Length: 452
Image (tube, rainbow, N blue to C red):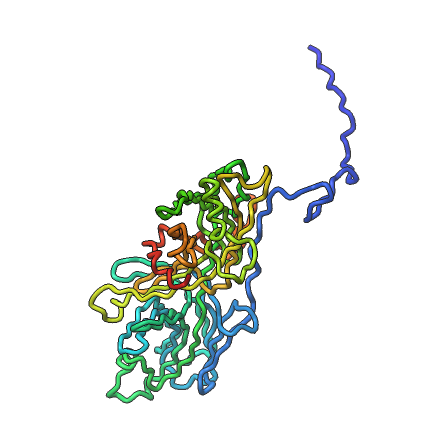
């Protein structure tokens, strides 16, 4: 029996660190970044402090930015901090409450209603046989809800907001939030006025209260980025799934000698746009050469931005109060309409030979004015946004066309879409807002007439 000779092996290759490639956080001269997974933003480390009138109690809210006027919390935010006491004698209990409310108030009349949006109370300390001395510092943590229920229907918790709606009657609409602590001292309360009844009346007799309003600012971002511009071709634009077309017809008057003009308005298909980014668009007009020549005085203008124009593309905001919530017997809406964006036009890039004899095309964008809140809808109050495309001749009696009004519901977000390896960067958990259809019924386009 023979034993095979074990083969010999070469000496193992020793690692050579000179062959290890070097890496850097930023792309090199001939490199490019394919994807970036964004990290969480650092948590704020500042404090917001408010004191009671007597100075015996302080409410310290943590995880806030420094030097702010009011605390700010986002969707599902955690209201946390401490109640700090300088005097703890005769204290029976300490509690902290977070509350949100919607107030609708008639300006010139007695109509008034309040709706509780959220109420959450935490009992921080109560005196008993085993806890006779109240601590000087009591930590707390309460999580804000993301929704609330009213009359069996659930709504998203709305942002802090206030608006005045003029009219007969006019209304103030206010959504506000507060956080406060109550330090109870029952021995200072007369026996004939129980403490529980004083709370029902909104009075804390013999107790110390320290509170502050805060700003509820839920943040959202679009699920997709703004698309690349449409490509031009003979007769208009090459349509794309990333863009949605809204066709309409500009009617010619009888005996004017002109024909109808077919209008195509293109906007990004998602219709969910960031409030800090301009909204791009494209427009094409198609008809006979004679009709388009007659339309020139009413068409988009690429100059004189301060001069009134017959063709406009605007972003409109409608705020609506349902007065049934302040005692009206029938459904009546009071609304206010504001223009928060005015579109600018330019002739589409001429890849061919310019506009054709039977068509003319424009591209443009709508810069958005700074807004504090995005759209929302709750019981009694709604804020909705729409793109409004109009052709309105200055003198309708002399014009050869009757005009056009096309409304496109949209939804704004607080933050822009950001790309990473999965398509959406979650630097914070900003949800995608509901689509314009999910927001509820579309506002009446006739209501926008007063803002034109």
